[in-house]
Amino acid sequence: MLSPAPRQASNEGVIAAIVPALGDALIEAVERVYEVTFTVERDRIVDVLRTLRDQFDYQQLMEIAGVDYPARPERFEVVYHLLSLTRNHRVRVKVSTDEETPVPSVTGLWPVAGWLEREVYDMYGVLFDGNQDLRRILTDYGFKGFPQRKDFPLTGYVELRYSEEHKRVIYEPVTLAQDFRGFDFTSPWEGADYVLPGDEKASPEAKGAPTPLTADQIAKAGTVNVTDKPPVEQAKTTEHPGQTGAGQSHPGNQPGEKPVQADGKPAEPPAEANKPETGEPVPPKTARKPRKKPEAKND
Image (tube, rainbow, N blue to C red; front, side):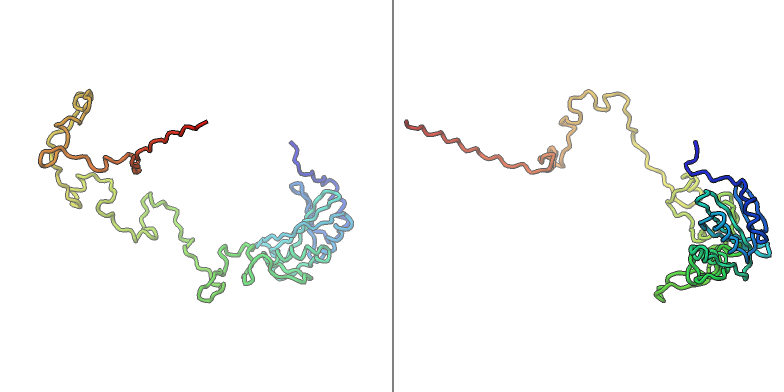
């Protein structure tokens, strides 16, 4: 099954056509993973992108991204992604810089670059010369540092919370509730030789709590006094059906089996026995009035 997305045009002949137009501004032109990438001089980025837009019909600037390579002298790469709608083709242009050297802004070619350059500045700290509104766009106003740099701590430098005392959001140094460096992966069920945080509050099991010990073991330990149960006079058995009341017309309803009072008279049924099972009051019966005979009509 073919992909529903339109197929991108072939890269054949793209590098050969563009390299002469870029001249000495080009550092490297490669094709990897079916993508064409041009690495150019930082100070010539505006001329390179203008050439690609006007001469090779790459009309749209789709994205500006940053990459951090801390081991390099110029640790940052700024990557521009261009799209040609008429040719259905994409190319990538890269420049490198450091923490202090600015990159020329391309807001004069594409106004949308203002927002994209602000994102790179906010995440990596890359400066753009010519951007009239270079300020943070993704992080908070008082954010310190640049979170996408490889040397930025995962927890950050400051944290913010709402202070009930000051009635506003305040910034504080980061305080970790748990020391990640001393984390132990040993399972406590495998016999750890230390007390887990919070277990020091645990108390021994109270008497009567569930225990795997038997009654004899508890008695030997002296924690519970076990007394002997009174012996049963006679075990109740039903060795034949007659002992269960089977075969009797009214089992348990014989005169000798009915409950009696202290004076020997049969016990009276409780008052609730006379009530209907539904519990609703029974209306009293009223006498029916006699019908009147119809009077005879005289013709």
